[in-house]
Length: 187
Image (cartoon, rainbow, N blue to C red; front, top):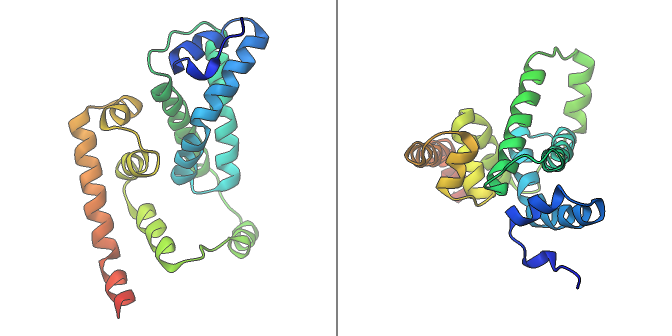
């Protein structure tokens, strides 16, 4: 009898990843279909660059697969995936901070940039970029990815009350940043 992978939990699928190759690939496809969109949204919001996000996104799922093949014990696959993505994003940001950009590269990047179709979306993205990293990350995981406070705390490695505070402060700061623009748009 053929196993129905759609009814398995994430943890059961993760265990299946460590088994026979054909079974592992089906389990991987199911995990990927369940989590890929939220993981990519998170990475893109944190990094802000689609090409860079695509690389980190692929590496995230490659590391998930490798971990299962190595028989690693994981209790919460969703949190584990986001933790992998988070660590890879932090590494990318560190690399980016250590690189110098030439004037030609900067000019090329500015000319090729796609601008959002609506003014409000552009303003919200600007406000997100102005947030401190810890506030932006918590806000994106909650509002864009839809994780619970407990899941965010597990991904980030802190407590749930700290996450609640970070999200509250992020919302307050976004409101404060956007207030003058929203008033101007309403005129």
